[in-house]
Length: 208
Length: 111
Image 1 (cartoon, helix red, strand yellow):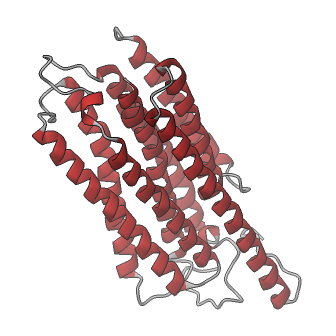
Image 2 (cartoon, each protein chain N blue to C red):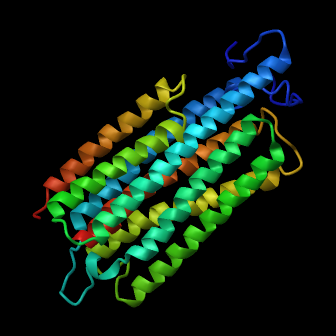
């Protein structure tokens, strides 16, 4: 099978994300990258855990003064749902339903943008309360960890929109199917990291 | 064939089979999404209801997070499918290094 071959619903392979040599390599390479990302985020989590609530004086806000459950809950639901919408996109990709895949990818991007908006609001709110990147070791560790995740969401958003724009008139083939698939892996991985952020940073921060 | 294209000689039969298989997988993914939402709700509730000690709540919500991430990895990211031996090796190597880092950083400080 070739990357530029034209397909129909009948001839579309069962595993379009791994049907060419290039896409097999892409699949393997991307998982290798995700292994590295795991180490990156683990070291940021480790730093955060070591520096949590380490502030120079008692006038600085601590985790339990800053975090609020409702905001974190809404952000979590947005990102979790966007993980499901990208599952739907890949379901339609496997069934060679290009338009439906694009609709679900669009929804994924929309939910991701909503999450990012909430995070920007949250950060500005904290800055007004005196919790900044340079105010304390706690602040530095917090913004590095959560900001790196937010940066990943922003990158994923650009990635998704670029893929949609670039392939809007192309339809599905074995050249772009692996690209969509790898994006969906990335997006799920962002959600994996967020599960630990809402648990370790926000929920554990509120527990004390 | 390497791409696991199934071939019975009758394309209609193959399409029906694959369509059904994809739909079945989608069903599993919907179930795992429902479970993930459910686990998230329990974790938030455990913190919202202020009746428990942190000695219970912290390990409990971390366990819920781990279970939820397993669903995400094995169903949403298809690690339960065949041909994911190398991805498992990469991911678990990352988890191992990460776990050692977290252990080192959280034992080097005064709590």
